[in-house]
Length: 408
Image 1 (tube, rainbow, N blue to C red):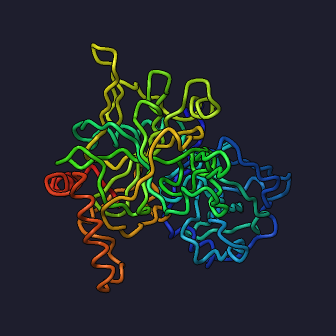
Image 2: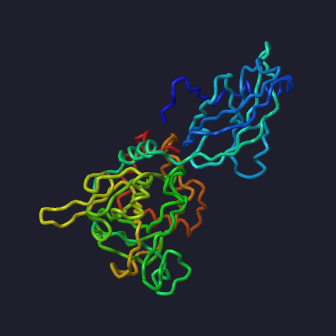
Image 3: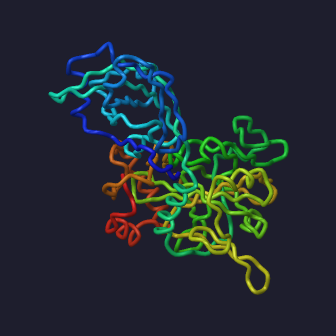
């Protein structure tokens, strides 16, 4: 969001001044306490803040404002411990409102508490301060279109070559596909349909589809040596398989939903397939970057000279495809796969912010896994599945040599 001219911007400050404010001469009665704290223009990594300063004898002595910002994780953390909180901000007494921004201490879709005090800098460098104001709560926003397009560009840079595929597939436990399956809310047993369910909060913390968009998850990645779906899966030994053109055709819009990693070299891209004019299409059209169905880096549907459709997927990312409408089981087949079920790795704790974070790429499995014999076997199977799908080897080495791809 573009800031208006002369809009003050506040950044994280050195801790020295803050410490002196806490350990200096203490509160001064004639410094006014900020009132009516107001938060506005909230984005995923910034907000504007303003307040009223009552008329009092000490108003002209104000030289600085201290802003105490804290994540609201539980009730106990609403009580500020000023000497221990690293996110205390210091600003000169400038016209309000002022902008607080910084992705290193503001996260998307996160609740915060904020409190303000006035301060007067003394000749010895210490600060005289007022009491703290009331505590105000607010929540940061999802990624904006600008942030999502930045994430899209990072995903495009590593998508790799396109491989042909012919089917979408979904693995589950046997009970999911049975007629009577009351334990699965995303199934309509009577009509034998897979119903859309709300996406969980896995993936990027700021993705606007998490906890909001409804859909049915599918995969489409294939083994690079066979061109077919892998026979191992971490999601269940039974697979529903459907021809690609049933879900993806000239009447389907494609949207980029998310890009994240699992603290390993494997990167995930979430795409949304929404029939034109559907409720899912209406949801995505104002929130997500739209992709050209025949010419994008991840998932393509092209019309051949004979009028048939051909399909391709990116090799070097794991695609998670959300189809926004119910899917009738009679449109495909359900069969047991021949391979073993792999270790299911939850994406709830996936790295939340590929947009901003930078550091060293982890080249092995998640570091804190308990390495017992059973788990080693499962990890070996998972690596075998990823290797078949073309995610290891040359691709892995390319990641290690590129510091601009994965940041932890």
